[in-house]
Amino acid sequence: MVIETQSEAETVRVGEELGKRLRPGDVVAFYGDLGAGKTAFIRGVARGLGVTARVSSPTFTVVNEYPGPVPLFHFDMYRLGSSDELFEIGWEDYLVRDGVCCVEWTENVEDAMPEDAIRVRIDKTGDLSRRITVTGGEGS
Image (cartoon, rainbow, N blue to C red; front, side, top):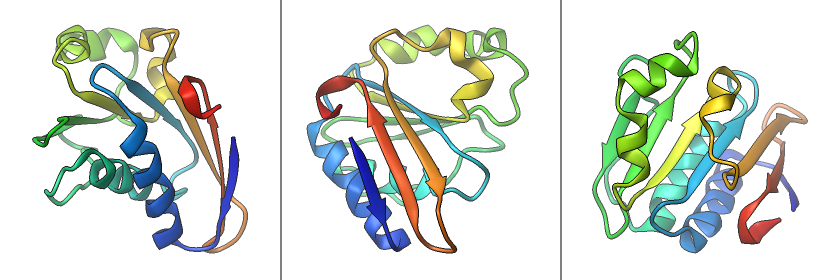
């Protein structure tokens, strides 16, 4: 599925629609350049999951946990050198905690992603416009 958005608010809304369709145990792997809108999209996913907390990028903490009807585990792999570091922080434990894992900068830990991960690529097509490509899961 490919969707074009013209604003950050639209990108958030697309994330919210995906969030409404996600189930405990789902992993969503994000790809895109710095500033592409990955965190904005994940704010929408959180809203779709029923998470009411303010979502921010976990760049320095690696993972932020948000409680909700379906918990959200928001990872940022920007500062990790390999998937070994991801496993050291308990990646496998997160996969079985009945939440949804959203992983920014998946490129750095590609070999740790489950085969059935939903993949979201966000490309800048203008100052505010984005092309969002979703593959895997029911949305492809």
